[in-house]
Length: 264
Image (tube, rainbow, N blue to C red; front, side, top):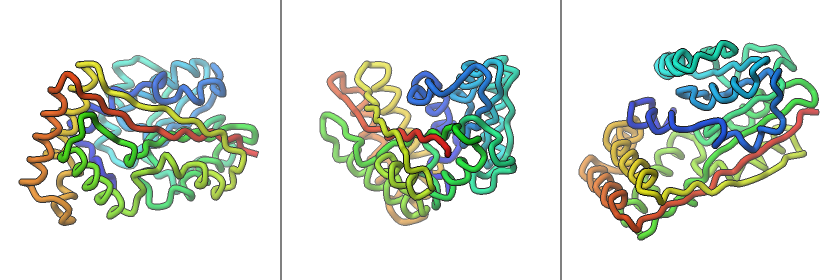
């Protein structure tokens, strides 16, 4: 179960992601002729950037639902990149031969999987020897606002409960090193990035996005269905997010874990 869902409030936020921001830790292993697999490509804003880096290569972006692939196709068409293919596939059963790709990349995917180790192992299978697996995931426990907010604190509790109810790990960023080793990739290069929201534009975008997502996405529906928060509490949480977003002194940060490993 995908905790966020693919409703506009979530997808619009995800579409702000770029390869420059989200795949910089793997940039040095991507050549102009690289063959790249982008697992969980979402609206394809990162995928398009990967295709531009590998301008003489090819990028395959995969997702598990037609809904988000339609959005991704529109992004690709608007970008005008020709070296990019989209496909409906599961990371657990990739329909590609061993050693097909130079790089398998996944951004904010493992945190939603019930078996991330199996997914990483399958990504490594389709990468050639001396190729790379690159995974980036956030750690929801590190998501902290200033000033402190009871509503945002409650949001974090509810979100993490919903994610774990779905059999997934919301604090995936800190687990990547162990997951890679368990998947047979012991030589892992770990790095981390702090995501920050403090300018008027980024603070308001982040806060208002989560206010909307607490009311109009699959996360909100699941929180109510599972019994972690009713509609009144979600309304209260959303109001707290809006109040935080409108505070000119407000600040927010969290950590991304980044794992990069070469396939033997």
